[in-house]
Length: 234
Image (cartoon, rainbow, N blue to C red; front, side, top):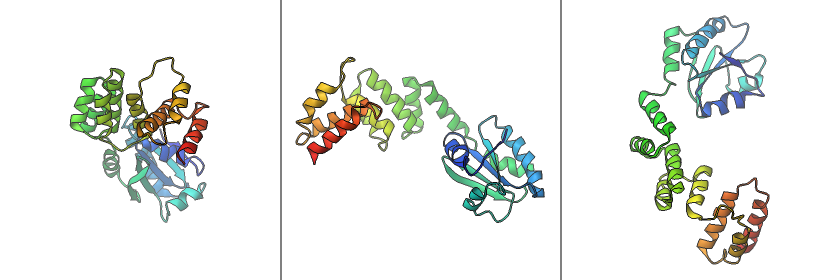
């Protein structure tokens, strides 16, 4: 089923949504005859994907901000988004065959489906198979590193994480791999001890940063400790 978006909700309905599922944007208007013909075709073809592609409609008369962003000069205009970016488009009325080809290009391949299934399985064998197929897949690397850290294989986990650029996800797993703490450790004593060492000791500084990473931004102590770290370093 298509959803109607607005200038205010376009970011959420299209850009953000396309980070997980491809989105087809139908720019139309009530006075546009070809739009009335194309709309049902888009709904039918996208509906056949069973949720693998989403359809979002924009009435350009009611949403001039979106129309201006797309520099719309004629309609119907259809734009496909994937991963937060426009990846394909066409203008003018199209037949069902052409629309189906357009939508099919957005669907994952069989190989991509198999890779996703291996990652979703989440066991070590499946994750290692996934990395044989796609050695730089962040989801597989992070999931496998989590398993390795949990069983104490910190060195392998850290080596695995080095394959890909650092992100919030990789920083957190790497911190868990490097820091060995008791379940009831509240971090305060260790952080206080490390503060006197952080300026001249790289290892101590890394431990301090890792502990803050494990505490997370929601811990009320994190920001004050970061300020103390900055004061000691500079």
